[in-house]
Image (tube, rainbow, N blue to C red; front, side):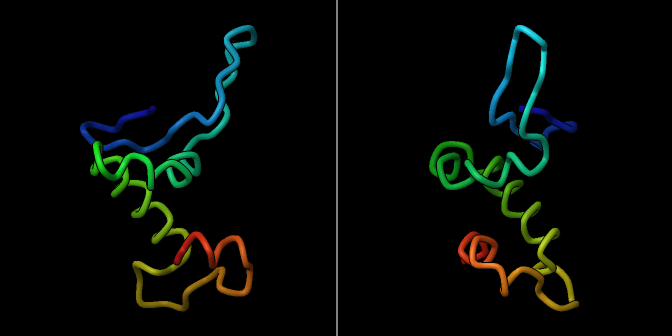
Length: 76
């Protein structure tokens, strides 16, 4: 997990120690948000904030991704 001050900003979905490769990044924090919510709500909130900003839910503009079933399901 990558932190910026006290806010989590990214989660590795996979790490390969042989080649020192991290896979996941900032989008990786969205997928496990549901699992973090009960015990680490600040991590879940960062995941939601990232998704809300990316999809337009947090702004005044149009919501993006409702025409894509995977994104619509994630937003729900």
